[in-house]
Length: 331
Ligand code: ACO
Image (cartoon, rainbow, N blue to C red; front, top):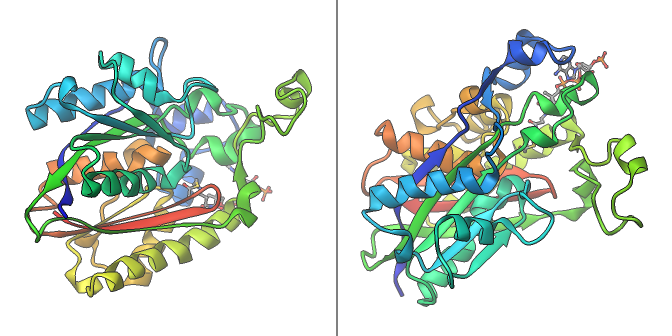
């Protein structure tokens, strides 16, 4: 059975940069508070005409160019997002249309910050089974239009940013390379600790002025609980990925964690015992871009030469659900 390799990556963020000082003009916050609590200095927000699908299209074109491929060479799209352009249909079909494709299957994955690793697991299984040979795996988010830009929303609004990251995946016959394993987890007991309640068909009507007035369409987070669980479960998922392959932290060339929060990533680094050069962080520039954060970080790490052929890469993610996941990859 072949393994799945990363053929090329790409990413795209909107041009508009929003600094912590910009946020301080909209709500009661400060650069000091945001920097100390999250490590974030800037994030990108979409402007008129930009959507999740257009961000993903730009990232996809970049990866296709790097791979020397055309959109028509793709035979499947897996689109991971928790901020779809519309309630229905999912964003995969809108991206398919943007890429000028017609009969390519498009799967939407709704696993929030863990979306990219969940999507990787699905794409990997399809590729190893021989069902598809060229899968475009997308993580893309437009958070900014859903954020409460007043003081009421400051605990979540300052953390999130917009962006898209993609990978083109395909089979390799080289037994020493590719995706070694993926590990997926969920615990729905914590579903309401980070969630957007509405619109939702649990409500009748599923959207109303009352729901909007109550702010039910905004992301609500119990930050302390997220911190507590993420800082334990992310290192645990890395340990699982290493153990499953008979490896140890010393074998790790690079850990690319979901860019949730600098303090969470530092806790992950400390718990596993990694040197600074063994973990990649770029949350300072982009904020938390949820499903897009891992592919954006991976692309930048590759551009900076942090990962070479044969190196061991591990991905780990944690997010709303709670869901969490990891993957071990021999580059
Ligand atoms: N600016 C200024 N003050 C703020 C802001 C803000 N943006 N947000 C909240 N505050 C205030 C609070 O109202 C509170 O004020 P009070 O004491 O008068 O009530 C004070 O700051 C302290 O609030 P705490 O909740 O105690 O702050 P804490 O130190 O716990 O930090 C934070 C909050 C940063 C959210 C922290 O809990 C955290 O890092 N949690 C992890 C959450 C996270 O990273 N989520 C990412 C998304 S989920 C994911 O990707 C996995």
